[in-house]
Amino acid sequence: AEFPQGITGAKRCTCSFCRRRQAGNVTALSSSVRVLQGADNLSLYQWGTKTARHYFCSTCGIYTHHQRRSDPAETGVNLGCIEGAEVWRAEPMRWSENHDFPGDD
Image 1 (spheres, one colour):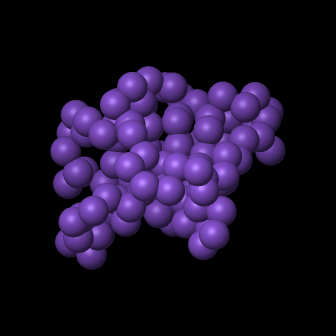
Image 2 (cartoon, helix red, strand yellow):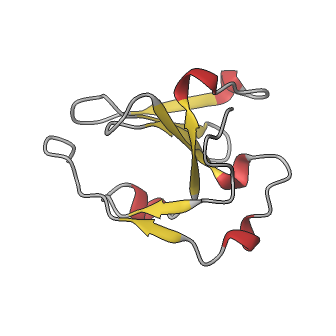
């Protein structure tokens, strides 16, 4: 994936879904995201307007990435799923003040 802001700007989101999973994510351009291993084992989760697309490993349940409803040209990628990323060095992570979207409950 192409990360316009690099992988050092990981943050967490405060929407009802993201605040429960707690994964720090970094912003990638959706058009550049490629799953290199295990794409056939990903599950898609959507709700409400079905604009956002949240992907998880069908075996272990790890959240890998999501195409954003607020801007489908952006994909949030779980920092822990990026080979070589040292997640612990990103702490404390910033929180992005996002609100629940109407129709997404």
